[in-house]
Length: 166
Image (cartoon, rainbow, N blue to C red; front, side):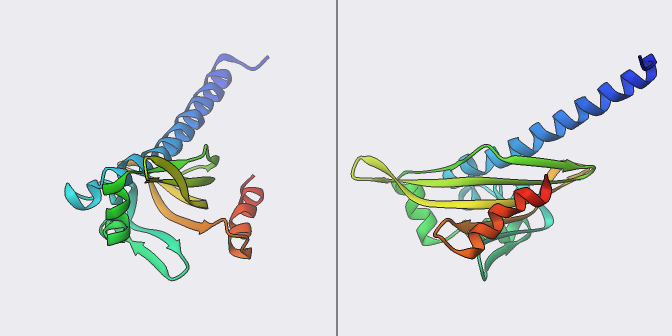
């Protein structure tokens, strides 16, 4: 049986790993409610604040925001404003998270529900690859790549990143 110091060090490492995992999941979970409240353009950069200063949100090929302000601007458009005004929900699935020191990756699905004629319909279904880093202010997103699950090779390539991170 290992000595007390060895056991304590092992337990501390396990607790840190669990804390990191929860923190990464919380960032991913925060995105949807912040996007759905329209705080991005009404009361500051809450959605953008999830990202590091040099973070990137690639919503589609050729359509990305850079840094907290650029990412907030990415959502400040007529389509997103209409979604929020008419009722929408950005809902993530539980992510597959891999922590490696001060870096983390996560892959998950996301759905956007849109309120139409008194009901909610699935408007968008995507796969996401997240890269995060530990900062002095906690975990921040370095990159989120989002691809529609429309049968494309691009979307399947994002899904395959789970195997690369495991």
